[in-house]
Image (cartoon, rainbow, N blue to C red):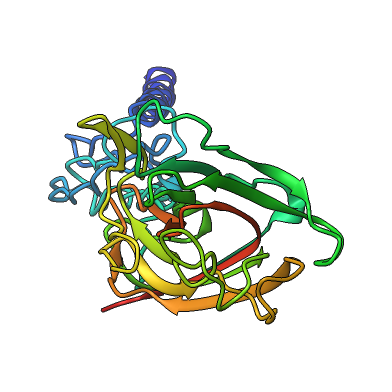
Length: 327
């Protein structure tokens, strides 16, 4: 009789031990013993991926309080699986705590904050740097306009280095010669932001002041204009004449994309004389504030609108522009 009793007791312990071991695999505290003798599982299973905290069960009748909260529950998120964080058995006071929340992703760059002031500088000794040249306001098929442009060595009287040369013979009494470039987010401009733009241009001209020419003076009748636009400014054929697709005004009259910035007359008096080149600088705050397009792009346009029916050749040396945000 004693031998059977001893065997029964040792068997009960083994059964209880097996019962507890099975409870740990499910990621939940072991069930409270229905007889009130088996405590709840003493360790929670591997924590789930931050499942909801287990709800405490009502202690089993006569049973001891269920095992403490799973100690691994606090580090939730590390288990490969396991569902809800260890839920206590019916005899447990509480399940394992919910695992810590996962780490949030890095916030994307939303371009927050107000637009900032932007400054750009171009020295044509370094090449075109994205600038290009063009011509407009002449009849299609006009001969011998002598149109040309490109990076050239500066005239010796100006100094060393190179410039963006542009030239043409104004046989239409209205030749427009221009250079252009776009800027955008790569320099800090913001989509749809509005800017007040100031441009400073340095160029070499051999047009002397107070000279007389056909249709107008070679210096004072060649008007320099600065402008900005969100439209790529190009010449288009209209009624047999090449016209700009933006309104830069006409000769001495300004336009929305053509703020008057003076003329190309240099300071060498004594016309007619030996027409030497001289480096000049013109600075203007543009008449029209410019809003960037949906991609943050603005085009800069610099050109001469000529009323002088003769040959004009300029060397653009440098361009400086500032974009100040407008509330």
